[in-house]
Length: 115
Image (cartoon, rainbow, N blue to C red):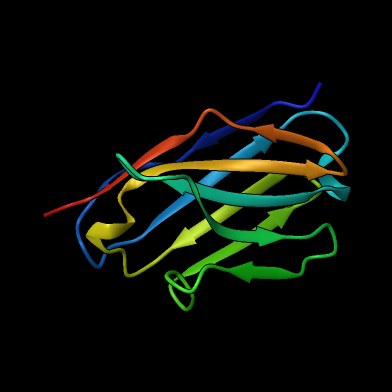
């Protein structure tokens, strides 16, 4: 059974940076598509960035040029480097594994951008 555990969230000032990590168990990670999603209070969960097993990436327009998704297949880890953070980036961030019809979500990590 695949499990995903996010870490790295916290409180950061506007303009600051954070790096989120998602540790995966099981053997699917290296061939699965992975993604970061976020959900702000009273809003729907939205896609932030995705990365295929081959390393192709895609980003929401709101984070392009500021966030970078990457993966370490040897250690089954997914990352999200977030720079130039804005108050509107405040949300719970979730990683997701997608393999065919299988979807696995982590429990989320909270990011708060505030002065």
